[in-house]
Amino acid sequence: MNILENVAAARAGSLRAVGRLLSMAEGAGRGELLAVLEPAPIRVLGVTGPPGAGKSTTIGALVGAYRERGLRVAVLAVDPSSPYSGGALLGDRIRMAAHTTDPGVLIRSLAARGHLGGLSAAVPAAVRVLAALGYDLVLLETVGVGQSEIEIAAVADPTLVVLTPGAGDAVQAAKAGLLEVADLLVVNKADRDGAEQTVRELRQETDVPVLTLVASRGEGLPALLDAIDAHHRADTVARRTARAHAQILSLAQSRLREHPDLAALAADVAQGRRDPYTAAELLLGGTEDARTEDARTEDARAAGVLRPGS
Image 1 (cartoon, rainbow, N blue to C red):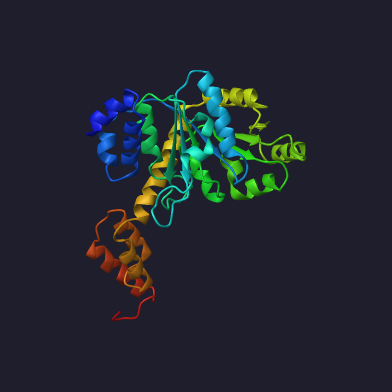
Image 2: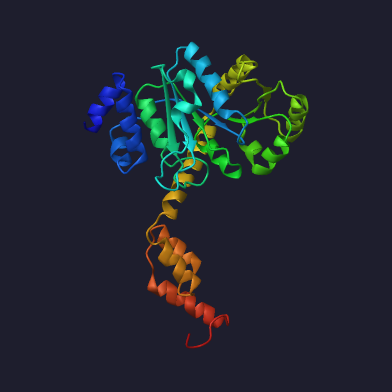
């Protein structure tokens, strides 16, 4: 099947066709795929936080709530890449078994594949695919490894940071930079000892709303949904532009890290054959100007940095 046939099949309800399109979004056919998909509006809700905070349980509760509203929901879980296959280590169906038989819910793991920032480079393309197929909401879960999770704010709005009572989560989240990108803070497992103290600590660290939740029982879920809706209604063009700016830079940095000339340019700089400024310009697609290079060399000699004859 070609791309348009897969799109038609996916819109007709074929989850296998949806899977094929998402596989294309992760692979070499991404550009060809995006060329035939018209942009469409879709909400993206990010969920991040340290391991064990209950992100998947929280997402499962949110999926159930949004399905009750009649929304088609997709979950993209960005997992650590397998060192052998490059595939996602964590299984889709293990996470949220209650929703796997619901045709209005799609759950998909995307491998991070070494992309710094906790997000797969395929995420923006996958989101566009899902929007084109008529999904209303994407719930985006990241790997939960700390500092790198701040990149989630480039894709999602709002970003939920899920923490648990005690264990110094508030302090650790602040150190990891998670509080800087949090639009909403959620203290999950709030029936445990120390929940109130954790809420107080978080409110001392940040001005964003802090909510409590027991995701496994749905306690606190209506208040969380209200906070998410309120944040979405307050979105602005300036905020959307800032997210797009961060997303473009992130993807550009990923492309540069994979540039075929990077290793050779780094070797040149390390051995003194080229300065890092020229190397950076070349990496960005600039052309080397011999006269400019000669002029810099003469300036360096005049300044005593280079000996005559160098």
